[in-house]
Length: 85
Image (cartoon, rainbow, N blue to C red; front, side, top):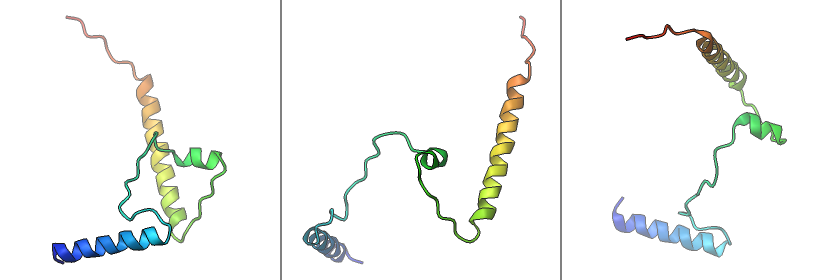
């Protein structure tokens, strides 16, 4: 695709979007705060739709999270020997 053709397509998308009352096609999204976790989203009443295969994937991520939490929990209780010089 040539630069001129790409620019024409971009301009056309801008005009069509403005005519339809939509935001411009190239509007940048600015994130104003920290990302929300799934748990926070669900706590405020959000709903997650599951698709085929999602349950297996979710179970895998939960298992991995539990393994990581257990590893982090045991790491906190390991006493490191004092280093004396």
